Amino acid sequence: MMNAFNFDTKAFDTKQFESIFFAPARAYANLAVDYTEKLANAQLDATKAYTDTGLAQLRTLMNVKDAEGLRAYMEGQQKVAKDLAERLKGDAEKVVSLQQDFVQQSQKLTEDNVKQAQATATKAAQ
Image 1 (cartoon, one colour):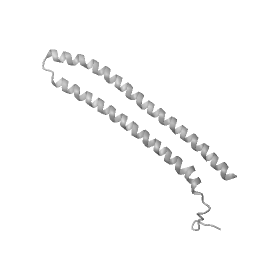
Image 2: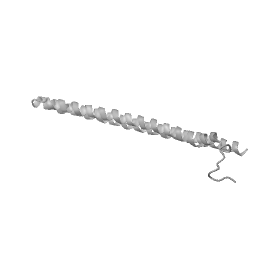
Image 3: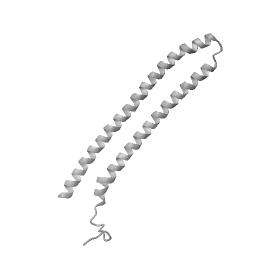
Image 4: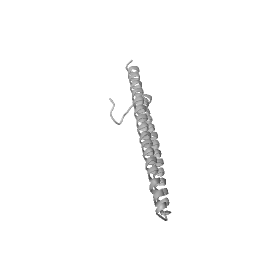
């Protein structure tokens, strides 16, 4: 009779435990870390671009000296707004693409792990 203190390590198959539990968990963790890194980099890039644009606009505004300069600045605002809208759209598309890729890779990883677990269970039952 075995109890919790007399665990027979020879009867325990660590390879099966590794392939069923730890390997899939590690693979998903790697996928999640990669996704988080890509998302953080995309956010940092977007933040830098928006900050640079805002600071450039402030510097341009500070150089306005007369009515003609103010008119030129205001006309330039339309282009800046258009550029920012395009950038925002592109950034949103990038995030959606990252999310879709993560979901697809997660699904594939799950399917592969289920197949492997079924194969291991079938093998162990024989």
